[in-house]
Length: 444
Ligand code: NDP
Ligand code: 2IT
Image (cartoon, rainbow, N blue to C red; front, side, top):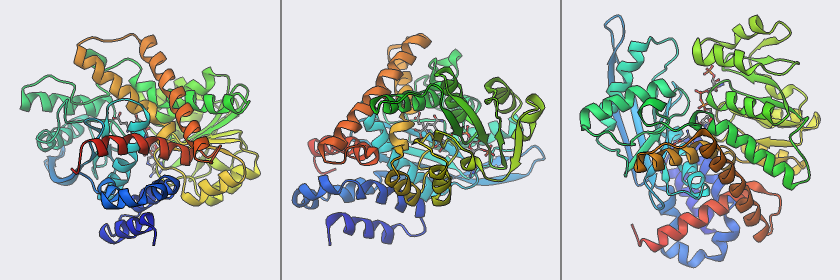
């Protein structure tokens, strides 16, 4: 049996009931065959892949908090510090009832390669809790965040592990967590990113993931002789990534006709009104059922359906495995030319293969959504030098980083004989740097 197959088998055996983690490991390792096979003897001797798939440390802790009626709740908190070969652990905190250890491990594993692709000195980590922020009062959110940080603060720091936002964690939650960290540790440092602008946040971090997704999609299309201008786009999700993906797509001359949340989706034939979306989601924190009140021409549909609309470009920006084989078939039948992942692992493996086989340009999340964490690393730089850069400066650095990521993964795909396969290209380009750093630092 090949080394890769052995390690995949081991991961499944040693991490039962963690299907998302298995999926992420398979997706990465399968596409590294050409590199691993060429170095099988030394990698096997050094147990390189075993060290890569086993987190350096994983933390699981109790998070008790009191609701507005005086009832005590207990959630589970997680932080997986996966790989620090190229820098302090870096990755978001997800607050969603579906969170479990396997989900945090899949996200932490992906983060290693994503962070490597940015070219910045950040290792891979992820955290979260099964806490559900929906319907909670501000005070309840604060109570949860403070309790979560009371435990987490023992294990993180500006030079060790720097969490940030993800699903369910935005500026409000980061603010409460930062305040509690500072209060307990007595240190004002860049321990979290995605902070508010009044206490060390970076301009353009809010927009960065969505904007970066469009910068790299644009670069991919250009390098294949196309352009975003005039294209019709389907976006899923209606959160941080989706909102700013829609905004930048429109700025680049595309028409975005859909957004969604976990209850339903919007089709707006005139193009999504981003200001209305921001008012509903960021200010009022309401559901998409409100959207037609702002835009009478728009349709609200219950359930799933974003991928049934005829579009040129699909941008899944909600959550893992939200675009399956059936969806891929509908997109292809409707003539889609490109799919770029704003979310982490939103496309199932079968759907990815189907899209690639049918000539659709496919950019995996670890490259396409790396603009968020890259700008988090820029926030860390600004915190270290105790300065803040203008929006234009951060945004132009972000553009440069996204273009470079595309160039690097495109070159890696070509070098190994997989021209146009950006999944293989991204995994190899991300892996090579991590392996070089791991090898240089000895068996640890
Ligand atoms: P938000 O919490 O801001 O928004 C998430 C959106 O996705 C919401 O509209 C939510 O709908 C929807 N969603 C979440 N879970 C599900 C589900 N199980 N089924 C259907 N819809 C769902 O999160 P972000 O925009 O920050 O994150 C979106 C994705 O992007 C995630 O995969 C995240 O890991 C990834 N990502 C985020 C980055 C960032 O900087 N924020 C950076 C890189 C990747 P509802 O409100 O109904 O739950
Ligand atoms: O998945 C991701 O890259 C994020 N949620 C952002 C992580 C970060 O540290 O900014």
